[in-house]
Length: 303
Image (cartoon, rainbow, N blue to C red; front, side, top):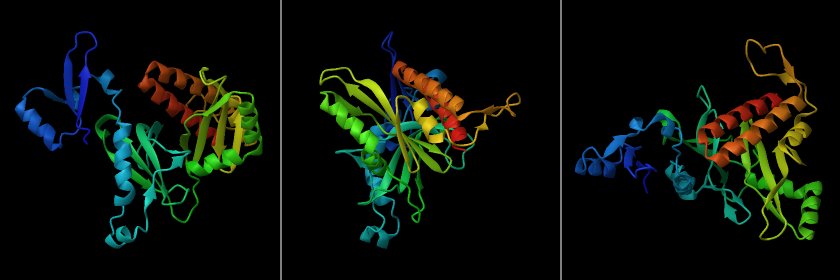
């Protein structure tokens, strides 16, 4: 499998354009010599279209499956499978890579990436992240970041178990299911905040099997705390409401301004709702920018 060419079809006149995203791919080099002028460099793609190019999540899923074993470069370690990784499983399905905005270690600014976590073999704590970059000249570059082996970093399955073990949440889910409704737990969104992780999971409720799911609650986990509220704003207030007020966004006019936890939670909620709207519209550039702003607000709340 390869990720060497992006094909673009003009919806108005049917014109097809091919852009090379991996100039080192040997097959593309051969095709480019057979059909001179057919393939263009990725830099030639219109800027507004280039912002929507993403690394294929199915491709990273397959690469991650191989990398779980082949990240071990020491022959003895590899032979004994001393540091074998696994892709986390939630329910009966493996986690799939998801797109997010974050500043990678050593980088100066946030960027749009595809991310998938790893856990040690037959264990549930986090072992590493595998990321594929999507922006600018870094498109297609893959990095792996490992967590210290002497520290316990909660993995998705452990967070899922903590949610299930919460007496209030489990009681509420049982109550809804008994009333003939179907409870649907959405994808677990992981937002890195400094050296910690914030987990956000939407909870949907459908009146029956054919009913339209409606967002009912939002579950947020941070450290050892798990809360469930009607929206993200209230959940963040419960998590961080007891902390000291934190500085508002940096800027010459707001350097001395203070924002209360409730104000920051409301701002986070507004950004979150805008991000969902942009996602439904297919505006991935705007969606990425909204996630970046949401991360900045969450960082301020966690200080």
